[in-house]
Amino acid sequence: MSPNPKVALVTGAGSGVGRAVGLALNGAGYNVVLAGRRLDELEKTAVNPAPGTTMLPVPTDVGVPDSVKALFAKTEETYGRLDLLFNNAGKGAPPVAMEDLTFEQWKSVVDVNLTGSFLCAQEAIRMMKAQDPRGGRIINNGSISAHTPRPNSAPYTATKHAITGLTKSISLDCRQYDICCSQIDIGNAATEMTARMAGGVLQANGTLAPEPTMDVNNVAKAVLYIASLALNSNVLFMTVMANTMPFVGRG
Image (tube, rainbow, N blue to C red; front, side, top):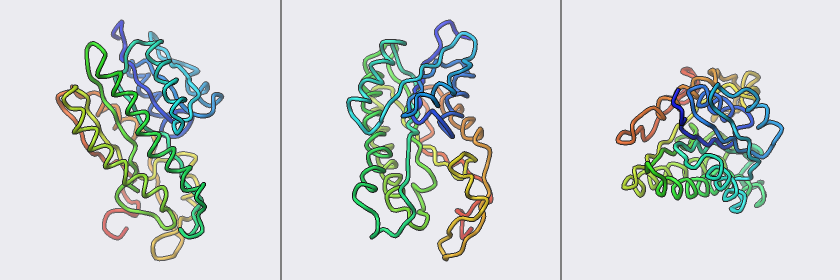
């Protein structure tokens, strides 16, 4: 292992995809900053860092600019640089008809999924431009919903479509600074959020049907692959999904 491990920052690192990716990056030799709202869950992720590395839990609300600034200031103070940002924190709204959603429910999803990703990317870019050696990599969690909606998912789907535009803009605007930006679109990774799928999920034709899931560690392996590339190469978009889930064609 390198005596000076690279540094990664993972948002939404207290559970699910974020926890799996944070642990995988740490296992690959990264020092990992773990951001999320629940300190107790972040500490569970950080309990057993790989030899020669550290994991740093930092309670953060990614939708609040001052909270994000404090997160990146703590990262710079502790490690002096940032090589990888995994913009993973996300949330959904209740699965109700669009006209029944409240403004507060809409705004809550936009604040975390879209504004949070923007704020974290903004701070990461500032660090990556200024550090020596310059550059780094940003990976945004887009979701299958960046392509195709589920019923009654307007806030989540709208924000994930917007992540695609953010990914393209970061990739274009930051390539001159040796900063790469990727989007990983995940379908039915087995986490607490997808446990309900075994009992049936509302389909576009109005029926309920169980959906297959995949091991969340497949997502972590995909992130590790993207992270392994030299900064003169990039995976702009990648889809990692349960092979037989309803997405390709008509299901």
